[in-house]
Image (cartoon, rainbow over all chains, first blue to last red):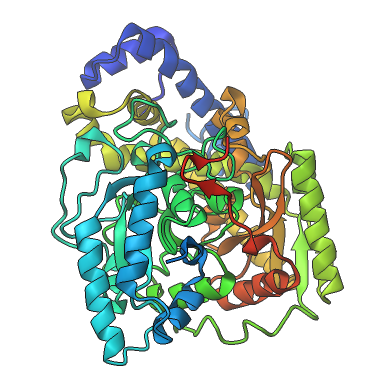
Length: 70
Length: 469
């Protein structure tokens, strides 16, 4: 995946697109696992920001007026 | 022959061979008989290669007769079933590979064969080392020989069972987040995750950036002998780096007087460590102080993020390795493995790369602290039983790997030695971690503790009816 899924419906559609034959019960089991994985990945984003400072590109985009020329 | 020899160390086996007290064929027959008798209930082995083992033993006998002095000649080994073995099926406990017979040995296996060991068979693991064990797995999950009411922790669970139950003299496992050190700790053995890629991983089914091959043995001197045979630069392993090969026995008896042991108390206090684990750990630190080591608190707050980073990296790398097989052989994957592998499909490339950023930060922190102290000490596992580790919340958060996973992430060597016994009769492990390629110092520190205590001399009580329950 290059883009995260946000809802159970997106998750189910992605599984179907991948061609993986998960049962409804398996879908219900994996979805919380995926969300938990996202929580752990998000905690790492916060860690990196805390220890290395904000991503300079994000900081530039977020400043008043946005990107130069934007 | 007395079955007591089944619990001999590698060194003792060598002495018995050279004094002709026992022969490789006799020892191999004894162990095969014990496997037949006891493994029905323990499930340590997936495949027992009895005929092949007796052929190996016969060859070893002739090598000894011709004066071969290699310390591993004729020593019966068990190998985790995720390490390729030429002519012996290698399943990773998955129906996907149920009938796979590799043509080539894993590099580490080839080194053992060259040294003249006897390969008894292939040991159990949770499917592909990346799932919760289930009774309907290709081979059911192993039980802990020390108290069979409890499961043996993995993923190198079968290798731990084989050595602790006297069904092998030594074993190889693999360790991606603690999978050698955790079973070693819980089954009263010495287990190491060496410096990353210092034992070639070629031919291991776990080839990600965290996993390493590690031996499980009964004593630190045995570990030195096995490490002498297995370590070395292999250009076929893409992560390997050239480095001088030390003799791991050099200085092993030099003691710990003057050594600086760092203890990351802040991190340990933040992990839910069970009371008897903490008590055993503190007693072990007291022993080190009595032996002349200086015990120092060190701050490594970033360790708190190592577990999550390890989990994200392991997930992403497992999915990358298994993606094609998962799609092609979905129905052959077990109910747990297919779900564990599927979840990782939903991580983004950015998630993985940010986990690698954390990995660098943790590695810098460990390197920095290891400039001020010689060795880091902590419990191997915060919990005593596999069941506690597999509570839904604990398992998802990887609590069990709180102390082991950081060193997979950073590549530093770390070993577990026995340091206590819990109320339910399961051993407790002490983990020591050190500078990259400084395994000899780790072994020296472990050996000093071993000489001063008797935990490593114990083994589970087993009889014809199997392990105590």
